[in-house]
Length: 285
Image (cartoon, rainbow, N blue to C red; front, side, top):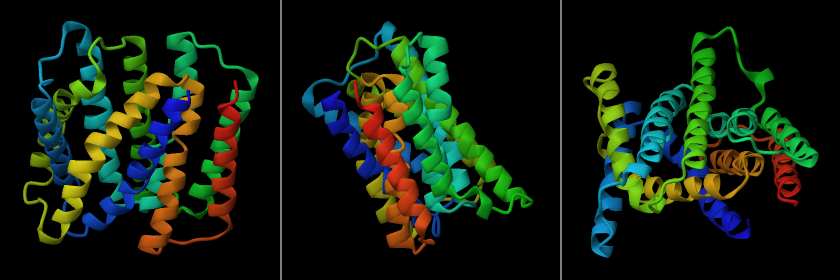
C-alpha cells in the first residue's frame, strides 16, 4: 500500500493541476479537439518510449478487457464528458466532481468484486464525500440553469466511466504490465473521441496560444498521470482507492484558486481538511 501512495502523490500533482491548465487552454482550443490532441500525443510518446526500450508489442488476449476498459471508458468516454464539462463549469468544480469515484467505486467493488469494506473505511468515504460537498458548494450553483445541470451531469457520468475502467482492470488483471498497454489504450481512445470532434466541432481545433498547454498535457500529464492512476486503482482496495483519489480534486481546487483566481474561502480549507482526514482514516489497516 505504501508504494501505491507514492504513485498516488504523482497522480495528484499531475491530474490535480491538469484541469486549470485545460481550462486555460480552452480559451484558444475547442474541448473535443483538445481531448483528441491529448490522447494522440500520449499514444505517440508512450509508443516511442516503449519502442526505445524494446517493449512495444501487441496486447495479449488476456489484456483485451483492460485495453477496452481503459481506452473506451477512462480515456475515451471520461475525456469526452470531462472536456465538454470544463468548458461550462469552473475548473476547480470539474476537478472535484469528475474525480469523485467514491460514490461508484465502493458499491461496485462490493457487488462486482466481492470486496469486504471494514466500518472505518465506510466512515472514511463519508468524510471524503462531505469534503467534496463542501468544496463543490452545490448551494452556490444555479440549478435552474440548463448548462449547470448538463455540466454537472456529465461530470457524474464521467466518474462512473472512470470507475468502470478501474473495476475492469481489477476483475480481469492484464498479464502485461499496464505501462506497455498505454499506446493501445490511447489509440483506442482516439477512435472513440475523434467522431465527436468531427461532428460536434467541425470548425474547431487547437490554436496558437493553446499549444504549450496541449504539449504539457499530452506529453507529460496524460501518459505518466494515467499510468499512475491505473496502478493506484489496481494496487489499493476499492474503498481506499476511491477515497485516495479525492486528493486529486482537492489539489485541483487549490491550483485553480491560485492560478485562475477562482473564489477562495472557508470551503477550501474545511473541504480539503475533511478529504485529507478521510484518506488517513482509509489507509489504516
